[in-house]
Image (cartoon, rainbow, N blue to C red):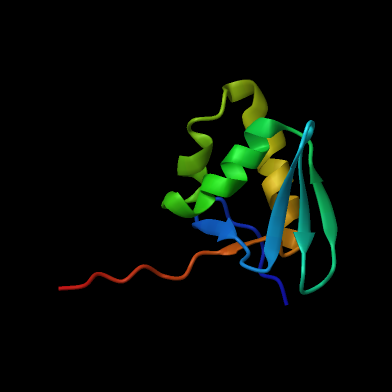
Length: 95
């Protein structure tokens, strides 16, 4: 069961997903559910690849031009619904 997409949380590329570069962006293939998604912008591909290095989606979107943020946010929500991106595991601090 997929949880609702929350931009205030951290996400990462699902380990079961492979991204194949294409001239238009990339193909995302999920080896578990066998879904195929098209990432139709190179900037979106970079965003998806780098999601895991950000505290939350909102932080990752800060580097995206204002005019594209809404479209990228909708794309990320679709990718989350398709299980292509998943919430990050809670980060724990080591003493």
